Image 1 (cartoon, one colour):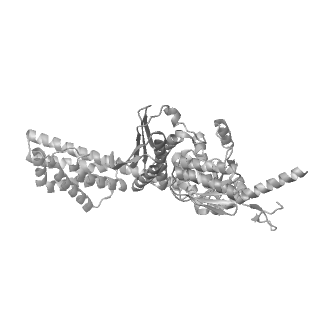
Image 2: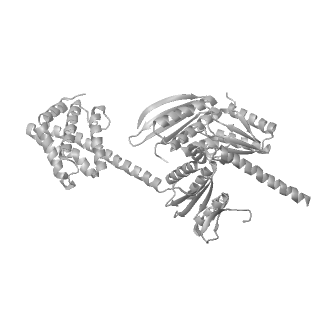
Image 3: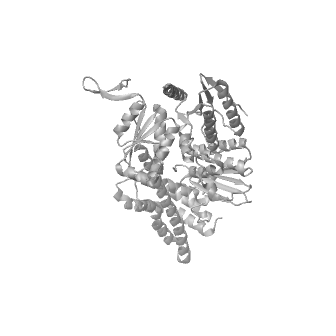
Length: 137
Length: 133
Length: 297
């Protein structure tokens, strides 16, 4: 697995959530993602970045452009040192109609990505990694 | 922070969202909009999102809440111009945008608002007629 | 880091390059002769010469890490080019691999003429290891080439099999044929929404007569498509619902009560027309024509 390019951005405020969207869009365009693929990964990133600002006390997002020889992809890692998520099952369940709280953000980001990984524990912060591959549905 | 302009078009209001909204801009839009609905006794609100290439759950909730507030103030809301990739993503995200109608563009949105207010007129005339009997 | 054994082997090969090359080309042509000259003779010799040159440059540098070492990059690129082009031309994996493996015999012959004993044994082992790894690398690249072709064809098939038809101005029809999986649904949604934008349609009829199985997943995919169209101001009617499907939907508890459904495409079309203020009726000359609905209807 090759990491062709990577960078890390700070995500501490609502304004920086906007920068997150721009950075992810830029990488997605460079990787040749279709418009729909771009929209999905940028939206997923926006959800996770907002969660990080609202519930994690802010953190960082690391972007990595991947190439495994067969396909190209974009991997995003959101890390914060906030309170962590106590009940992960509950957090991953969606609050569909009201879209309230973290639930929709996590579940939504998961549905919009091809790969989703989360490491969290109360008091130990949270690290969420999502990957979107070009050409996957 | 930018204020999003609200245009008056007859008994309707038109809002065109063209920038990446942060929390404060979204909140002040809701304030401005509800204020304008009352001030002009608007019957309908058109929210043009044709410039938005990303609508996440925050913006989605904002749209749904705005429509709900407008409803309480007796105005209908129509969201227009959603881009196809945004529609596909919102559905995948699971946002239902209940209580928010949609139309393809501003023109269709206006037609829809007029149609709704016509139907309401007919209904209230019928109610009046019933009452008189 | 160069080592003496591989350096000596490389210079031996260089000295006997011409004879090795011509024997190698001859062997391949013999094997490929059944393939009706897919390769022109000059083209094959050119490929072999360039490969041999690249091999002779990389070999003396003392590493046999073919797949990742930068020393072997040129050889890898070269093998990749050959493998991809043969994949496209329809060669079998074996025929493609023989490009590399058939080099062994001429090389062993050359080495036997100059070396003996342990020296010969070690050299044979070295060159065998190197060529085996290059051959395997080539085979993997060939595989990937075939997979890319298949993936691309699948995509084209998906796109071709989801036509969106404009039945009347403002009314679209989407006859779905075959399974409706997640990948297909994406293509369907994109085609439908784009058609809504292009034609300004406000109604889309999704006909599922040709969808053999409607389970919870398929129903969800359909509902997603309907929801997406609605967000763009178009209402959907689902038609072609067979009796069994109606039963399945109820038994599965799928909530489709807020979606209009009709048994046949014809019924759906009639509803769509009435929604836009049109109807179908007979004219005085007993020809069927579309006329505007009047208050008397």
